[in-house]
Length: 226
Ligand SMILES: [Zn+2]
Image (tube, rainbow, N blue to C red; front, side, top):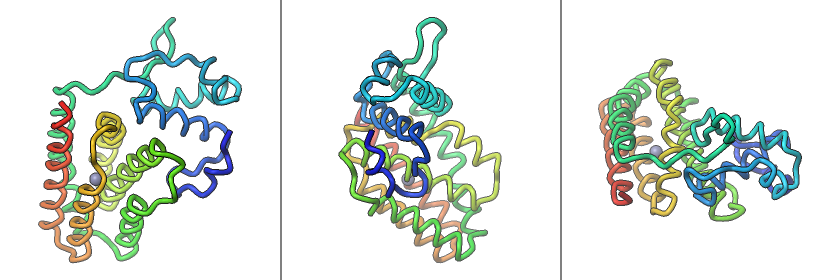
């Protein structure tokens, strides 16, 4: 197992054990579609490939099931969650547009200098994370960093119902998995920067607008894939 190469990973994904390293490997394969949506995930084969026992593989799959990337069926076992349908995609974005611009507005009203610098750090992590092991891990880390950035804004907003409702949808993992083969990163970073400008200025309306624009543009970038 390549444990050593992971020790310098960013805060949000730092592994603490073999279990989380195994989790990262399977997560990357799911996000990169190396494990195709809907396909079976045989525990014994994965354990052999990763040269570990079945226990950490089971643990990783249970966690991925909670995150909505994996499903478990009685007598069949684990499989990769199916790809989002167009309807699910539209519903998810409509849902985000209801909640996240308001979350950004509330966050701009309440943000302390310390919270702002944490958010700036989260944005910077997306842009200049550690050198990626490979394209898959770079991409799956980007997905996580984006999820972290958005969650951090909602944490500052202070409405835990909004935050946990969005978090439990695991929107980012689903969406990033969907658009693995599309170009996402640079434009999203520029949109995040516009959000940060609004937060630095303490401008709630600008923050609301920037978030709405970011989500709409993200939606439009992915719609091309349908
Ligand atoms: Zn984003």
